[in-house]
Image (cartoon, one colour):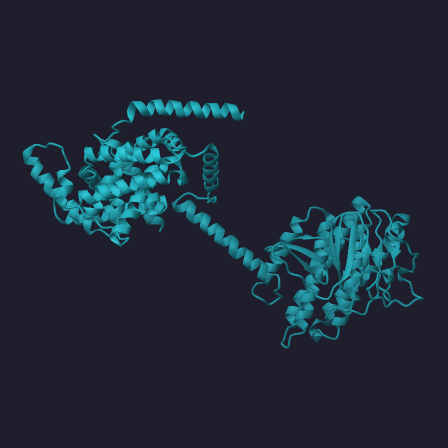
Length: 229
Length: 397
């Protein structure tokens, strides 16, 4: 029985790898806005946790290729989170590098479930930012212009101005949220982490994150409602 | 925060794509959509991503490959870290509130039940005790255990009456309540034990009654000087009832013949047990029966130690000895505790009258042992295989 289950496990890993090889390189970085990744619901896209778990397992056994695939998959999530918080490309790159180097060295001590690897990466980054900033408080250092210029979509010129104004207003509103709410919004809506991943990063229960996101969006809604857009 | 929690759930479901007609939610959803459209911010420079990839691969190459043993160890570590404490999550909103209310009610009920055990008539918690008593009776699975439960409760009522009588206030009404309840319990107990004897022909039922009357009568007699004058009539009733029961039981035991003799007829001489006090006079053997040594299981060997070591306020002599009986269980008699494992029991003279253990607790009272699970005495395990010969008391007619 043990031999059979071992064989099946190996087969599953091979299948996952074949699947991963055909889809992973390059990841979904090109279309990695959370909206495209998740449909509408942030972060709730059916992700093949099975494949990620298999990669995590391989990486833990010292398979550098597997770790490379995980890196390709999540480097943008980590970089963007860091960038939003530090607002400097150089610092964001340094901290992202440090995050993955640290993860590589500590891979064998990773004891969360395989599918939580994204939350683990972000948590490492979060700790590094805290060390760097000497304060655990969440702050959005990214400028509104930087944030919005990242949006590559081409809109019709007449709507573009209006939408940019609206987005500016929204971003400013996010920055005025309580630190906890702001971080929740960044992780859930901007970075598109799942509820579970966000809960892991924040060290809260999923129920608590649900309440946090509700409060945050309510506050934003009120704030934006005052200015009729 | 059940309301907020419900709203938070509804909002999450709406984010997941569930349709909602709630105007407020629709507004929040529009704001969420706007947030999503903001995008995640500038992505990483592809050149940086490629450089870091190379650096990581180079770093990985210098790292020692984990040996299979190390991999196994880390897998074991993961497995050990895996199981987290099981937390039962009960629904949301109303179901959770109900579960919370139920748990609180159970907790409060348990505490009230435990506290009520020490209440006496007139106390605010006494009705709880009475109710628990009736539950214990209903939980009894046979006439025999029901009868024993009644007798245990009768003993408690007698003790209550004594406690009340010792107070320096007008307690006549409360003492009468306790005595009335003692009378009822004795009657019900005798009835149940009689039914049990008729149904099973097991003399243990008769012995339980005889033991009880032998224990209770001295207490009731002692109360004559303690109770208020207004309670003397009721006390007299109780005493008469006990005498009557004792005689009736004695007659039945005598009529029962040889079958009962094996139980009542062999006596183990407790004087032979080192360290046990025996004040029995040499010329007056207990029960006036022949001595026997330990015999086979199912034959009880009774220890009859006359003793002057009375419990506080209890005039019955303490008993000690070793008994061998049929079934397992535990019992206690006035002045002593009997711990009974299947077919063997030991009677120990006991100084304290109550032993409280963490729930479930075993309480040793003057009337019987109660295995008390929090909130009620469910098992009354006064087993009659153990008889205590009380020198100087009328034993068998």
